[in-house]
Image (cartoon, rainbow, N blue to C red):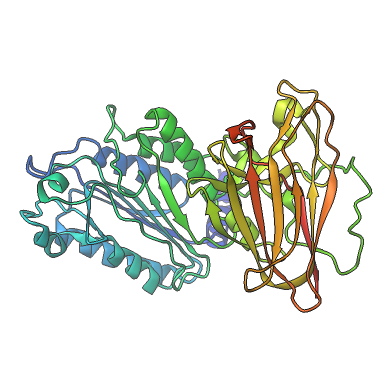
Length: 459
């Protein structure tokens, strides 16, 4: 019995020590369902709040769960969240989740308390809670990372009755005082409504809860997975949206497992110059935890060896991503040279597309590695026309590489593209353009931008 007691105490001590070493996590979860018929009663926010609260507790969060709050109750709970973050310390991750009605008024988002006397537009700022006030409260706290999740905009008669736009207005995540950055997530896109759900939970809450407990999934990939699941669940009637300024990795459960780096089977890569530096090791991007083997590229490029920003993405609905192509057509379409991941552009709508990578300082030379593609697949090779253009700080073209649309059953070898700066100006950005049309008619179904690596040579 004494030995059992000692073992039990030892286990408790180890558990306490592990918890002490982990970063503190605090959350406020609010679910408002009990609206009157004037505001539109909702069945699921209370259930959703309970489900998300239970999920967050499993993920190590200290959760304050509140339901059916009036304005005074909501403001008091939000104030407590800021106090809890301050007490928890500078390494704290702070999370706010809200399920219920939401409105936008003059571009400001408001969360609707229970019993709010909203008869006119002017009543909204007087009796609802501005979402910006929550962001401000979190930014004023001393935590490390802030996460705001709004499963709001569920169908309400108020917007139409008051002549207001549907859904929420777009909010951009701002790092504020959070060194680890911030993320804002909506259950539906700006200006769109979200479904309450036919079961016990909304589609968004159900998908979010399930994905949060999958180990090793970085937060930006988690929300991307949720977006794909909700789109499928709702037949594309609802598409979640996020804005992120996260820095570093964050997972709800477990660490991110780095993918194995492939053994090079390609050419003797001509980048052995001592001055050539990779902007990022593409092989370390955790594309394997995403449903479609894609990971949003923005943060990974921003946090690389050479911090790079993505700008001027067109069409606006497209996304610059890292895509694990080593599994494309069972691995028979692509052989990794230095990485199973390529940088590409998805969701281009089978039309012209473009984006720009902006470097932190001018460089003398940029080298791009294009992967080897094999024609012996179900589709063969139909490679869209593409152009890479080096730009100086004023946006003037310094050098470019162009290839016409290629339709062939001949393998396309890997090769390097080298863009040169001028004697008077270095390269400050590289513009990538892709066109899948042949004689004005769509002919290829993907972006031609497939980059297995990017290296720069300083001036």
